[in-house]
Length: 63
Image (cartoon, rainbow, N blue to C red; front, side, top):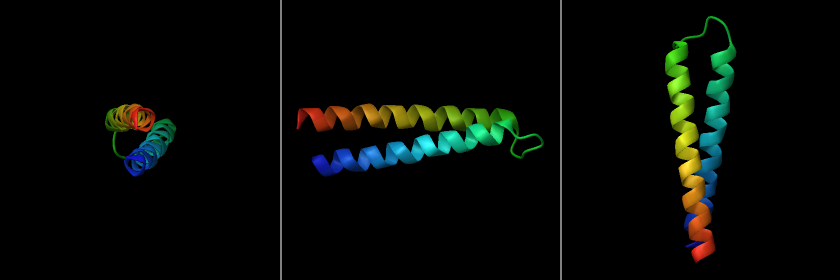
C-alpha cells in the first residue's frame, strides 16, 4: 500500500506542475488555445492533483 501512496504522490505532483504550466500560459498574451480553455485545464488538473494528494495521504496514514 505504501507503493500506491507513493505513486499517488508522484501523479499529484505532475498534475500540480501541469497546473503551474497552464497558469503561466494563461498569463502570456496571444496564446493558443484560448484563455478559457487554459483556465479550465488548470482548474481540472489542480483539482485532480489535490484529490489524489488527499487520497495518497489517507492511504499512507491508514496503512
